[in-house]
Image (cartoon, rainbow over all chains, first blue to last red; front, side, top):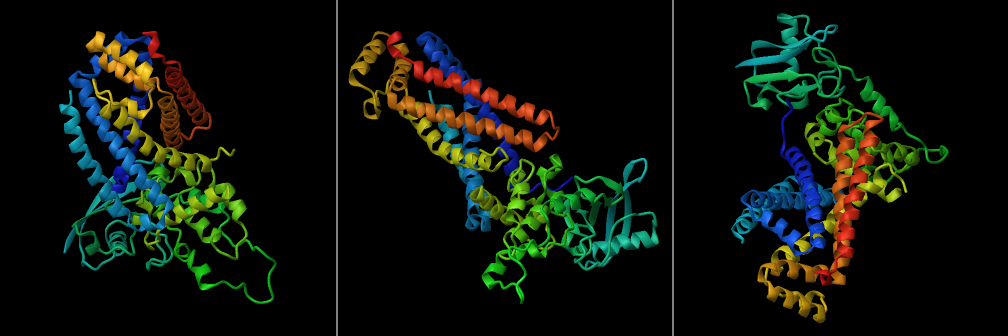
Length: 114
Length: 231
Length: 142
């Protein structure tokens, strides 16, 4: 078993969150297409969003987007500048910390929202 | 001090594998290579592994030691900070026997990027001049000893062995960024491929594994930017 | 255009960086700024006449307010352009990411291109679905 390093975890998480977001994108575009069918069809979708299962999914989605977005920016920075490459460990820790903090704050707010 | 050494064993013909465990009395400053050579000499003469210079220059004794690719001759017992030592062959390569892997695909991959000087101009009367800055640009990647520790630490290589791998990209870097060399176009043809540069996802396992401390991920980053700019 | 990876790599980074911005805007406008009953969209590009119609609709049936609020945004040309850009970036970046994963893991000479093209095809279908919804949407129909 090869040692699993922090960079490798971020690579695996980037894949997993990417797949999760694409799955949601499919679902979201379908949901919005229901708007063309008028208020009743749309409201049926909105009602479904309010169930605890979907709310839980929404919180997870927020986490996935925060991580994927911030980690993605870290990857771009790291591949385009030697400055960031020299500090890749620090930037990785920052990515986890910022994503984690925003996830806790935003996740609680989203869960409590009406 | 006493250490427990677990070594991966594989039959050459049947391919059957298991781990053998040896309890050894060692000094903290012993090399891992010393330990396995003593096991071969004193306990089990059938243990197979590659070694040559035993001083971190030839690059023949790269193996996976406690979950990391390292040179057995450069790693001391005290470096591992553990009294359990687990030694496995390089991951992602075909095992021929025990710790010996088939290195042919690795060298075939290296050959693809033409790892030799391709002159840009006809030979001058004296030597080809180069400034200190020009030389510094590829200094780091000249240190490669082709031990394969980086390539076999790379998750992209594990899942796709058509991928050129970090060692090959290091070789390409050494020549592409040499101001005297004129083989860029031919090499970029090989690098700008779906199984070339673009399977690198900056996971940094290679940089961590390199026994010569080459900043491999950074070198690959140079190549990515250069390739995108050229094509 | 070369299909050997360099353009794809660069575009994935450009689309990723743009999504970082557009997703922020999308989330803020659609899911935060514009909660039910918040009629803040005069400032973000919707004509007053149609807004008035929508307001009357919402007042006649308050439970439908969220729909009409969203509809008023959805109908504004500037947000139609934004949404098409957003859907295009999202479909491209997301599905190219899947193609990259296929290329990471599938080395079989037939399956690799077949799976990749199926992924591109799925992305195209989804993109058409999204863009048709955005372009054809007309709140006056309801």
